[in-house]
Amino acid sequence: MNMPKKYFMVSLLLAAFLNPLYASAQTPEERGLEISQEADRRGNGFGDFRAEMEMILKNRRGDESRRYIRVLGLEVEGDGDKGMSIFDEPADVKGTAMLTYSYKVKSDDQWLYLPALKRVKRIASKKKDGPYMGSEFAYEDLGSQEVEKYTYKYLRDEVYQGMDCFVVERYPVDKYSGYTRQVTWIDKEEYLPRRTDYYDRKNGLLKTLTFIGYKKYLEHHWRPDEMFMENHQTGKTTRIVWRNYRFRTGLKESDFQVNDLKRAR
Image 1 (cartoon, rainbow, N blue to C red):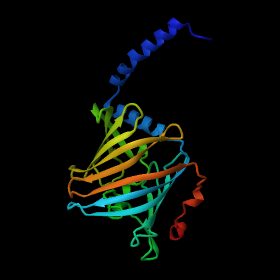
Image 2: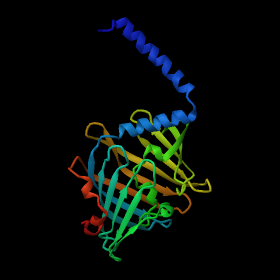
Image 3: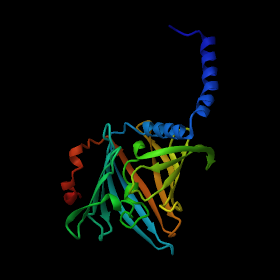
Image 4: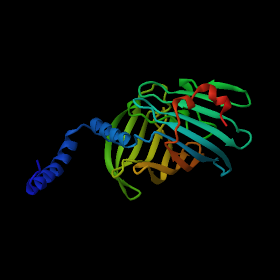
């Protein structure tokens, strides 16, 4: 049955009036969880992807080193995603490969193949706060950021780089996490993370990740052109530049096996 136009307009006005009241009735924890769930929901459905990335490491003096990496990702229905990264350059890291199985409610499984040792090394849960291949990204930063891995608290609305954003604090559930908390700016239009501040185990500001130049793929899946991680305590930075995203390429779970790390090329 079609709704008369005047009643349709009334319903829109009523919804606009009630929505702020609903938000104000929520606790900060409920609101933070709701925002994070919506951001996660909007990111679902990509299937799989392949991409290349350039990792630019810079120390406090400004000295640079660069690494070139291929990345594969697979969306897993009902659980965390799977990912593999393969280093192509420079020569001293060529053939190094890492495999990650992310999970919603337990610690991720991660394995690293080191060609110099000709063996696969499992990354222990207690060591996932360590730096990934000398970068400012920790191993725990590299898994899919499942909602269930954190508890949440909405802090405030704030304009960040000209965008209206929610500011949400989240607290890792994993007792071995290297962070006490993370504060994330999420834009209100597309629910994309724009910045995350990471606080160490002493609750000091450790580093900041900013997302630069989002592009849309498959009509509604957004990916950043760059990710810039700055370590405030060491002065080191890592910039990741993404290139050549391809989605739904036919990757399967059988393409993400531990035994394949030694043959990854």
